[in-house]
Image (tube, rainbow, N blue to C red; front, side):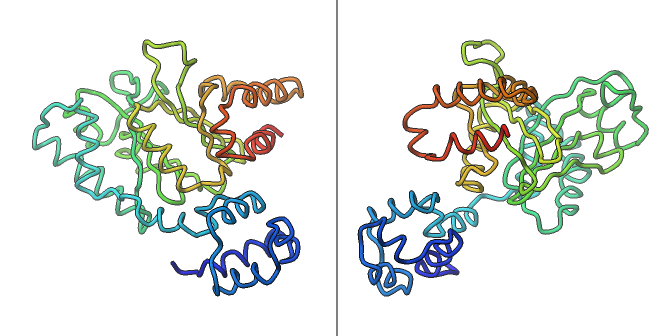
Length: 304
């Protein structure tokens, strides 16, 4: 690890505006014992780490800087892996033609990876889009580029929305948007108000109820992206590593994404905000509440 545990504990304590005496009193230990931990002369035991995580309102992973190690170990998409994944989705897991593989690799994946400089892709998802003949979206955008026309010939006129996540950014674009104009919509994770992942509709709806990602930036940009179960589970795992303190990541266990987004957008009245906070607080499981001790505080942050 780049930083010793003691240095990390001292830095956090100072950031929280607490003295050694303050923390030692809460832990029921001597100030000298705490000082030894911060000087790396001894290590806190597991019970003490648990207490420190409560005092500092931080996870044990964060206290020990394990988060940084976990982020380093996140798998990164190579050009070959990205091509295989995209081809599998577009061809619905059927055997692709070599011409199709060549096109996806050379016209989409390689230029896309080169455009992102050193930003490594750690998550990828696709959503089929409805388009009109000769258009590449429901809005009146004509297909003008030869590459776009070749793509539509090769892939039966289907357009897809692509979602990409790096360690610092979330991006979206449609394949034909990319082929026509090389455009992407990209948001820094630091600008996110929230990224919520869960079932698209209410849990009691079984048929056609996929998973979804709902996001909103601090500037007010928002959208809902359909995901399959595998995409959703991988995203939840990755976001839990990137944001262990739940500054923006919300795993919806009770409210579905549609209801969460709809109620969030109706936050103008105090009644709606209080109702949503009350529903989430009452329905959340004990295990989840224990794992995220400041859940209700963060929900209040989101809706204020």
